[in-house]
Image (cartoon, rainbow, N blue to C red; front, top):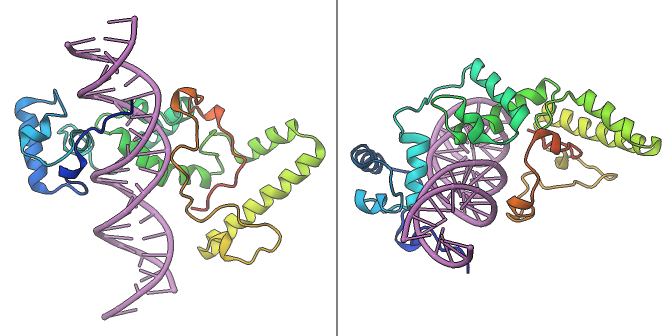
Length: 215
DNA sequence: AATCCCCCCAACCGCGTTCTC
DNA sequence: TGAGAACGCGGTTGGGGGGAT
């Protein structure tokens, strides 16, 4: 049997929360706690899904949350922990009082990944790009190495062009190499195997064969 | 001044895990 | 012990805001 939806979608409001909704949720939870998320919207007089209420509470309304900029120390903690546990955002967030997994994930995706790349460090493996290239080269036969080096140079060229002109590689005429992907790929949700069949998302299990998308 | 483009982040989706009966 | 419900997590999306043109 298929999984039942968490709520009746027809009668449920979606999108941005209004201050009135925030207030209702906050008032209710302050008084009664967070025991049953399915009942909370009903009892609080909200036309929201319980899941949406839980997310709003955990990511925004909780009184112990920090809302400001991430400090250098927090960033260092995220980078260190990510190098150990990978994309286990809840694990990382647990070490940062007042930060949520969503916060950490967003900050990683928007800031830290670029910061590391800019420092010549692969944000997936946390190794320097030159170290990775040397590592890969030792495992390949000479013709493959030559091919890889050529591909890497292509990636580097694309990245530089993008940085210098703020244009995507696909914006440039490229008769030899077809553009591998659209500028913002929309991968199908279930391209990967089910979670229990996937390897843990540790940095060492991932590789960086593909060109990183120009940021 | 208007339009375009990109970045950021709040919110959503779907799946795995845990809980309850 | 198994089924269904509830919860939690990570990936993804989309809209608003602001800078660039």
